[in-house]
Amino acid sequence: MINRLFSDAQFWDGRAQSLEAQALGPIQNPIEMGNTLEAVVKKLNAIKGYRAAFQKAFETKVTAEGIGKALASFERTVLSGNSAYDRYKAGEHHALSESAKRGLALFESERVNCVTCHVGHNFTDENYRNLGIGMDKAQPDLGRYEISKNEEDRGAFKTPTLRDVALTAPYMHDGNLKTLREVIAYYDKGGTPNAHLSADMKPLKLTEQEKTDLVAFLESLTGERHVVDAPKLPN
Image (cartoon, rainbow, N blue to C red; front, side, top):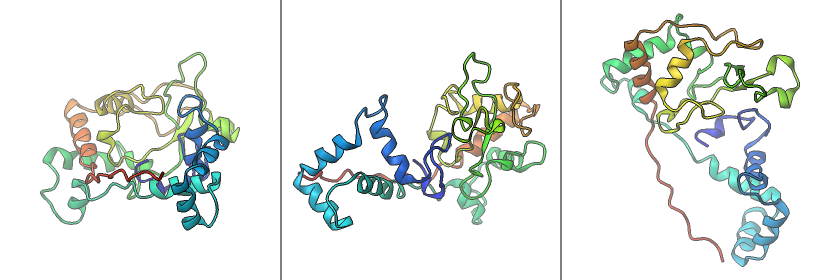
């Protein structure tokens, strides 16, 4: 959920066109909450405190639309910023280690060129690419293709933010890479060959020190931790 307010389409395949739509997805997913919107709306409407809260916020009783709005409103507060990298860019030259500085230079270099996809303040262009992850399986996840039906989207998934990436293992859409070092090694080999592999994927021929430096830079994107105190639930 980190920095999701900066994105329009949500999920790895972009199937939800807003945070409000995304928020309602897990409720109905059989392998997540395994519920229905109808059942949740009925349950919350039976609780006086929720009826009053929804009336105050939306001037309606509890509705699926209101639930989506409430959840999305909270998600927009889950932000990451003021990382060591941000402080460095603001002029605090000692905020980054020497290794992280070298990693930043590699990250932005024409040779490694991570900024082709991980660009801007949120380190993502919000586009979809095939990196080859899982494409060597008998029945690979086709990602964005399942939504767009465009051939070029086969096996393509959204570029995620790198904010707080050191805290969000495992990595990739299927979680098959367990560490940042594994992620770097995967990019270094140029991904997994397949008919729809992104043209941006190519062997990088990184040294072990360069891999270490890139990881150090990625770790510098960890922002300040904001603890959310759970409120007292309505009754």
